[in-house]
Image (cartoon, rainbow, N blue to C red; front, side, top):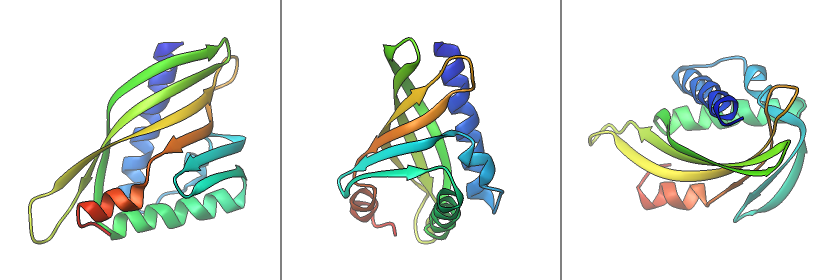
Length: 143
């Protein structure tokens, strides 16, 4: 199980970096997510569907990341905590690299906790818990 989940996140990381390099078909990214999902951030908790609204949000999100100079997303570490035989909590440490015009590139570390279903089908993210991304970026003068 561990190897399959880690390989899943490596594919997710590769897709994100292609999307940061330029426009891509984000429907490929939507395939990483379950048909329904939950998200929790300091802004609140929301539920969503893997439909055209998710695709539109992803397109907007990647465009925003490119606009603020996000150059690369790298997984620094993945810690897996099994929940049961079909579900795992994946604690993913990310390193985001931002291009700046007036200074060297800046790397910001952050963690996202993903709820992943696995088993007979390909793994799917059905939830995530993240910190206050906007505050973190403001703290570093980005955005």
